[in-house]
Image (cartoon, rainbow, N blue to C red):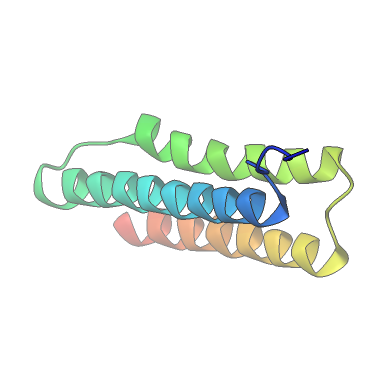
Length: 97
């Protein structure tokens, strides 16, 4: 008897996940570019768009934590990035005065 062909396997899942990753990066950097253009050339505040990018990253970290797929180096990188961003924000606010 002839078996039906396999439509999905580990390779298909890996390729799909890689595609989702590239799509997320494209959209995130596209939105960040729009925020930069609005801020630099139009002097508009685009906090709503910036919040979308940040919340996208938060969703990813929460999803990984829920599935226990976080590791110590990633947590350290996230913590260092958050602290560096906060310090940069403080410096920029103080420099504007």
